[in-house]
Amino acid sequence: MQKVTLKELGQQLNATVKGDATVEITSVATLEDAVQGQLSFLANSKYRAQLEATQASAVLLSEKEAEFYLGNALIVADPYVSFARVAQLLDTTPKQALGIHPSASIDPSAIIGEGVAIGANAVIEAGVILGENVQVGPGCVIGQDSIIGSDSRLWANVTVYHDVHIGQHCLVQSGTVIGSDGFGYANERGTWVKIPQTGGVRIGNRVEIGACTSIDRGALSHTEIYDGVIIDNQIQIAHNVIVGQNTAIAGSTTIAGSTEIGKYCIIGGNTAIAGHLSIADGVHVSGGTNVTSIIRDKGVYSSATVAMENKLWRRNTVRFRQLDELFNRVKQLEKSTKGEE
Image (cartoon, rainbow, N blue to C red; front, side, top):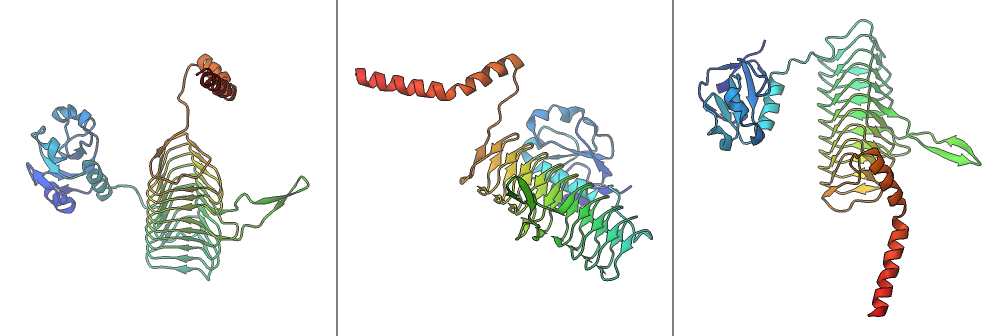
């Protein structure tokens, strides 16, 4: 079990230590669940009442909140971000693989960097390049001529098709498929004619991709995911989509082909984004929104209706269908009123 003192944490976080600097921390927890040896945090003042009862050995606090707590604390600018950094430091997640398992199939032409670990039954095809300290979990398949940058990690059963480039310090969760064919077909008198998807996928550095997500390869040019993007579970990213730097995309979102999403965007869960659109930098799309047109300006955008009793929903649905008729009637009444005036 790893241990670190408050003094050491304070140095790493550039924090002010309040109380006993020799207290040892082994893990992190919430204010309500924490016990001795654990560090907690207060990021929202509505939980301030829990400070008095917490059993944590120390708490991460802002300067504003520090006056409400008499115990050991680390005073920081942003308690939640500092919590994340301490959690990384004390992370006990096992490695995706240790060494190179004898059952792994590695093509002789593959270039394997120093410190690479490859799990059981993984397949590394011809022309693959794995940078230093890459971890490839059990059952993964890395297709021909793909490149994975140093210190990137793939959990079990990730499939990376051919000509996919993944940057450094990336994390890909289990079941994800990168580089599958985009949905490209031409229709010839009712018959679908497949268009070979000859582009690739290019993923930047420090990108994290959740479980069971699909990122399609480009039709001709590449699908591109820029540095610092975080992608949740069960997301569909279609061919030739571009996702800008440090954008976050929550679960069950679908993004149709050739759409470009800007930098620093937040896309809420279960969002559907139509194809061939562009979304400006800094846009926040609420969960469940259907984006069907270009978004040119930074801001918050929403479209979903809230849950309601089924009888009311049915009535409102009928009324929604009558909106056009109602609009025309109002316009006619306005004209009549103006005529009388």
